[in-house]
Length: 158
Image (cartoon, rainbow, N blue to C red):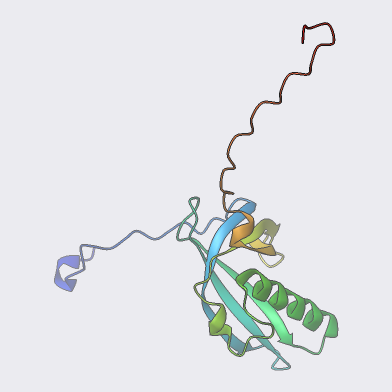
């Protein structure tokens, strides 16, 4: 048994969130962090983005995406450049951005799927697409159309 009173633990701590994957679907997000990292093999670099859900469902949850911007596998590199271009298009930032921080704190939508992690067979999330926020904002309501005039009846008196 451990006496925790001697540690003077804080009383205003928020409980840890669940690490279960998000349901597949479209989420309103912002990029809160980005970092260029070396690959484990040391043969390239990837840009890791941290996305935070800001929409009504799952607010505060995090998603990550890794873009292999410099990689010996040219297909992986091409996919990463196309994904970065899609993020730039969704955030209205010119491609290629001078700094990944230029993409931070801009609302966009991501399409999320669930996939099985090959390392431990658990389910995980993957971002499959990006779209600008205005594509999904409710359109301003148009004024109601007037009912069409009834067609003239040929037998009616003029």
